[in-house]
Image (cartoon, rainbow, N blue to C red; front, side, top):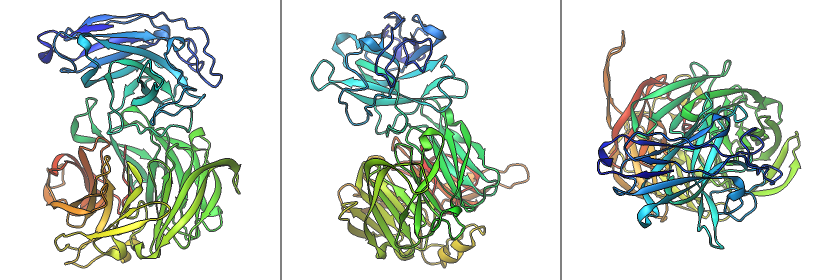
Length: 600
């Protein structure tokens, strides 16, 4: 397939280029290909072909395809200079220049004999161009039912093709929607997209192996009043912020006091813990379509795990198969089998005292558990799989490396004032030690942590008043007018900046990567004006009750949850960074008391 960029390229509509689905693993019956667990490709019935189309002409060209599947390429204006010809050629698995199941590969591509081949193509450009200035988006229609909604299909690029150092590297992800269409997810700081000329592969990673994060462009947070999760779509399909984010509800009947939720990197599996000590499971597919699982686990039946009757936090390992759960007791519960769709309680991890906040680093190497008496740090390393005390299969060793009593907090649940650097698991930011305005940077995790602290310079608070549904937290967190409280923290995707939610707005600290924390700029407390609706009068206020916070995966925006006008009818806003200007918001929306929102 080739396209010529004409003189009117910058004023014409985006071009759709269509390439046939040429092969697939045995999973995709009738599409040919191979590369599943046998690593032996069956005969490929699809022929290699090209399609030519003129950029800006709105022409759609389809190559021969089995089962009616097509791969559609959308080339944005400005991707290449005027007059450039871009050619896409279909490939079969048997003609790939490098195996994707056995060959050594770059970080970001998980090598496994269980990887499932979907399709492949090669891009070329005239004029010696090797890099497009804007990424080409990819979509697939006619996806067979054997790929269920929510399945993540990765796009990998063959770096250093033709050299001994050739290796695959993930550059984009797609998700199967409810209607059997693969839609490309938004790009992130870790995924560059289809920009280079060369060979590309579409494949499904082997279950439980991939740590590549799919940017679904959503925020997930709990709605305790209705016993549900709120799935908030923040962007349109082009990646532009929606003027008003779209909220979908994912109900979990019978739940109460949802204290934390987590989602696997590919968005395929999620989990939450409620105050009734029950863990529920869910998935979020393309376009933020939520699906609830029938599976659930009550942690109360396991000694030392849910003794206080209040599930508090949950964290997922990056491969999605293992979860760690806190019931605010002397042991944490390990749940395995999540990526198989059959989660089971497996074993416990001892902690020095109640630890009601949990976070796991993006690379799955460090676990932090926090409570009022301290912060406990664990190293996580792969281990020979073993059967747990309660069943299941545990594939990791969790070893306590240190406990830091001075970093306890009277806050609770969710992330409990902890935030890892997404790019460096040896670094984490801890806020609110002993309810102060201290900001602590831990380095050297997990074995020999070193702490450096700075104090947030912020105005006097007007009193932090969380929801009356949380009597325990009201007693612990309520502060008098004239003081300030740090309630939430998130480190930017590039690992440089910590954004901290307080009861007077948002403060930023740079130097997470250098070890020298410095407060940057003034407090961000943008004004929100909510228009009147029905019998509800309009209101205007400054965002100064930031209980939960997170960065979008492209690092351009900060998403903040504000318990104003009320906790059950608060406001979720997206701020352009570093200016802090509001680019979109939705209100009313339930905002949790604790820092638990997931950005994905």
